[in-house]
Every structure is written in C-alpha cells, then in structure tokens.
Image (cartoon, rainbow, N blue to C red):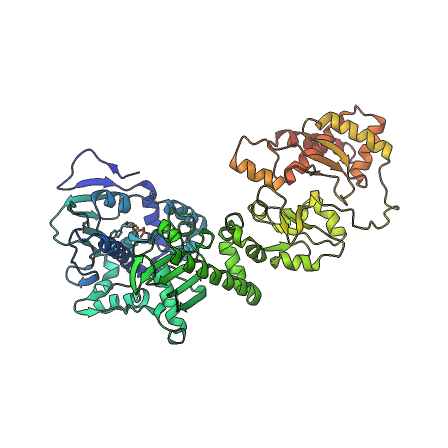
Length: 632
Ligand code: ADP
C-alpha cells in the first residue's frame, strides 16, 4: 500500500495524501497524549538511533556505501527566532519509496492492530497504551504545526529529498541539496510549545528518556547523554534506577521491567547478558513480522537487532542486550542457529530465563500473575514447539481450578498432589470464562463430589497441552475433558430417595427424542453424571471436545465437527415429566417441541447454536401455553 499519488504536480514538489487510518492515528495521538507531549523527542531520537544502528551494521560489511566516513551520532539544535527544533542523524536515511511507505502509510503490520487497541481503550486508556508502546514519528505533530524531513540514503545512487507536511491531509516530497548521509528533522514548533526551542528544556528531556542511547547525542559542543554499556559492569555497580532507565532505552517500553536478568559468563564461552521481562508488550512486538527483542553486541559495539534466534520464539517478550566477542559479526537467525557458540549461549540464556520465570512463580505470585496475563499466550506456544523442554514448560503452566479461589493460579503438580488416591486422571473443562466453565452442566457431578477440575479458559489451552496425536499426559496421568472422564472410581452416595423417571418411561422418551433430533446427535442416552440440569452434550469416547471443535471451526469454516451424545438426567423434574408424557403420547407435538428446545439450549450454552429464530419462536409458544394456566 502506498500513498495515493495525485496526478497533477503541485508547486515544486509532489503532493500525496495520507492514508485514511493515518489521520485517525494522528488525531488519537494528539488528543490522548497532550500531557506527555515531550515523548515526541524520545520517539525521534529512537528512530535516529535505529537508523544509525542499521547504518553501522551495513558499514561493517560494506565500506563503499555513501558517506562511509561520517561520524555516527545525533545532533540536536534549537532556534528561538525561527521557532524550530532540529534533530539530525547520520543513519541510513530514506529513499523516495521509504518516505512514502514509512511516513505516509500505516501498512506496517503492527500499527493497524495498535490502532484497534487504541480505539477499544477509549480516551483514558489510549494515553496509557501510547505511553507503553511508543507511537513513532507522528508524535512530532503534537508540538509542531509543520514538520520537514530532509534525508539522503546510504545507497550510493540515492538522491537528497525533502518531505514536508502540516499534519493535515497531505505531505509533499521534493528533491533538495544535501551532501551528507542521514536524516534531518526540522520541527516548526506551534505556539503552545515554544519551550522546545529552549536548550535547557530539550536537554532535560533527553536525559530523562534517552540517556542510554548508544550513539552520542550532542547539542553544540556538548554531549548530552551518557552511553554506558551497563551490561559489562558488575551487578553491584549498577543501581536499580540505572537498570530501569536502561530498560526503557533498550525496549522502548515506558513501564518498569517485571524482572531483570543480568549475567556475565567467563571461561571458554564469554558473554554478558542483560535481559528483561517487561510488564507488557505491544501487539507488534509480540505478533509483528519481525521480533526485535534482543540486541546483539560484540565488545560494546552494536551488531544486530533483527530476529537473532538466540532465545526460542515463545520467549520473544524478553528484551535486552547480549554482548559476546565469540559471536560472528554478521548475525542472522540462520547464522545463530548454525553457529555452535551462539547456540550454546542461546541455550544457557533460555535456561536462565525459564529459571527466572520458575522462581517468579514460586516466590512472587503477584508478579507471576502479571507475567501470565501479558505473555501466557505466547509462552504456551513452547508446549507445541520446544519438545526438549516440554516437561519443564508443563511445570510452569498455571490454571484456575473449580475448587480453588477465583483468579488464583495452580500448577498441574499442585493439582496432582491434591488428587484423591483413587483418582488416576487429571480433569479439565474448557470455557470462555470462569463463570461459563462453572455453569457447564457437565461439571455438576464433579462439584457434587468435590472433585477438582482445571479450568481451561484460554482457547489454546486444550490445543497446546497435547501433541495432536496421542493423549495428553502429565507425569503419566492422562488429561481428560470432564465428559470423557472415567468416573467408576467414585463411590455413589445413596440416591435412592431421589425421585427418578422409571426405566420404562425413560426408554419411551429416548425413542421420542431420537425421532425429533436424531439427525443432529449421535445418540440420546441416560446420564449418570448430571446432577441438576436436564441434559448435556458429551463427546463420544474418541470424539473431539466442544472447545476443540470450536478451534477447528475457527481455523476452517467448512469444518463440520462430529455428532455428539445427548445425555438426559432421569432425576431432573422436566425430564421426569417428559418421560411420563412420552409413555402416554409419544406423538405429542409439545413433547417434540420440548426435545428440540432442550437440545438447542445446550447448544446455546456451548456457544454452538447457529441460528436462534426457531428457538425464539418456540419460546413464545411455550409462554403462551404457560399463560393459559395463569389466572389474570
Ligand atoms: P517505528 O519507528 O515504530 O517503525 P515511526 O513512525 O517512528 O515508526 O517510523 C516509521 C519508519 O520511518 C521507521 O520504521 C523507519 O523506517 C523510518 N524512519 C523514521 N525516522 C527515520 C530516520 N531518522 N532515519 C531513517 N529512517 C527513519
């Protein structure tokens, strides 16, 4: 997708209109971030730093690129009279296409998702979200009524170009003179934000947000930022504040890290690593095209921040720095994976990170819960991709359970420890929420007998736990959805005094029900596990669970699913009455309507009822019938 090009040439440059979503984004940024305007500077500096990083790694392997000797750095200047603030870098610069694609559209994968999150969050939440994730270049329009970008690409055939916009609908691109590589961004400050034309104001913002940017940021003669490679220091030499500040720089994340892992290894294999698990990450960071969690350095010199493959993908929320002289200079995912040294470092770091998560779960449940809320979805992918560590990962899975407090999380091992001696299987039920799972009629029996059931509240839970081929197990104990559980070990209390439909009547009802809804179910059977509800749908022994079918349907709309068994509860008063009726008048229309209604009710509970029209119409008929017996 590129900017909508207009046919006529306007003035000396070419005019383009912003993509529609861009205007929305701009509007949202300006209105939700007015209290944190200053972050625009962090965003522009971070872009400059990225551009410098890329230039640096390109130059490592190719000295023939444009302006190869230019010093890598960021220069910032103000001009009170002209009311401008200018940020200049000697990074890779941008071509004409780059300008159109990067500064005119939001084709980049994450932004669209981000925009949706923003809208959903409302005014208040939006500023939080933006604060957490950064918004990039457009934030410049919070303080400027005109932005001019002058840039020249690192490619030798590049032209110097100027992009300018007043933030409204359009931007303009024209050719200019510029002899140096990189990008210069000139902000024409609006009336309310003249303070950003003051050096001291700008300096304090740089110190606050960009102190640890790895390239010198200069204002005149003075270098404003510190640039220390704090990962090469000893732990005892780094303060908590420094760790937190560095976290902001390296992750672009506003908040505090959940945990910090700082380790130095000497000997055969030498490296420093300073890794963080953040509190949260943006959609783009987790699900964008390229994950850039970890920056690689070689003796304090930046090498690479693409997908390094050092940590497995399900740990992609981890950010930070790894510095090792043993790493090959030109690292890519393939190189890392095929290089024995980096593979060893990766393995050691993976172990560290998992160890950290483990100790979080053991010693600090509050923090672990935050971690679980933000990253469990990504983390669970490991069950399906990292077979070598599957055992270890299973120990880290946490669930709510039916018998424990809401929102408290429990491991499989804790569950197994609480199991009665005779119980040999681990039970779970899937549902969209705790409430929904606990309202599932099939769980009644377990409640009655006080048997603990794991609640699989994340749609992927059921899918990731197994391997798709054989039965899922934890420590030799099979995991069973409750309707496939073997309940023979449970001692029935004497229910003799509870009224039940007679076998004879029940048989008539089953025949009548099969006549009506037989097409839609595999069978209708007497239930021995329902306690209160009239009926429930259960999977046949080797069938799929309802949640699994939902997943399959999400992936493939054509997926039909297998038919299931409708179990009816002979102790339920509705079933008892219907059984009597069936015995007397198997052809009753009312009986048939009830059979359909019962079936559709359970479909509705499971979220699988396709159309509701018939059900609603039938409901009205029932109401009319009931009202006939009401004295008005
Ligand atoms: P983000 O940095 O999150 O990608 P931005 O809106 O800040 O989003 O920037 C969009 C893109 O524009 C960047 O990804 C980069 O490709 C390009 N860009 C921005 N500033 C610069 C710069 N100073 N030098 C080179 N490219 C830049």
